Amino acid sequence: MKALRLHRWNVTPREAARIQLRLRERLELADRLPPRIAAVAGADIALDLRRREAIAGVVVFRFPEMVEIERVAARSRVAFPYVPGLLSFREIPALLKAFARLRHAPDLIFCDAHGYAHPRRFGLACHLGVLLDRPTIGCAKSILVGEARKFSMRAGAWTPLEDKGEVIGAALRTRAGVKPVYISQGHRISLARAIEFARAVGGPFRIPRPTREADIFVETVKREGKQAARRKGSPK
Image (cartoon, rainbow, N blue to C red; front, side, top):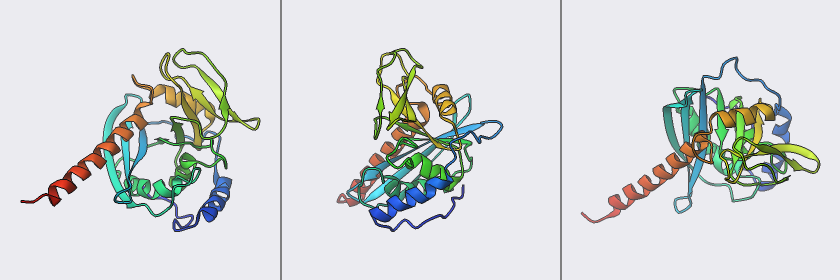
């Protein structure tokens, strides 16, 4: 998969925020999905701060069966500082390298990150979707901005996530009695369809299967890399 080259990555935090606002003009929050969703992907990042590396993982599934068909990983040097709201500038370069290695391009991408539920309404899921020109969904474990009211504990229930009077996402109860996950639009999808797809790929755990599998994958790659480095450095 090829990405659009819409900006530089070697920028200051102030420049990064301006890039988010500029790229937000390209954001599509209405459904522009393929006629048939045949493959979905989960994308996540693990950071190896000792090496100053981001390890990206993408896991692709056939949909709706949710049978895994491919997984790829890639590493990229982390140059951008940790700044809340600007994580895409630390993480997307590695993600783009991973997506470039895919043989099966997904029709829809789930990101372990926020999308529209972001202070500038342009989180990582939006940024990645615009660069790849693909429908994306943000699926986060905690709230970055906004508030959600208390709602039913039954599986599949949801309530709007609101900020300053605007609905920016949804708190979705994926399993009965567990904490919700926070779904938001990334690119080329409505909130209603994003919730629908998040339910469809749920699986038996709190975290929807695409991002859960991607999270496990990148942590495994990170751990195996550390083990290999220790073996290489051990005396013969």
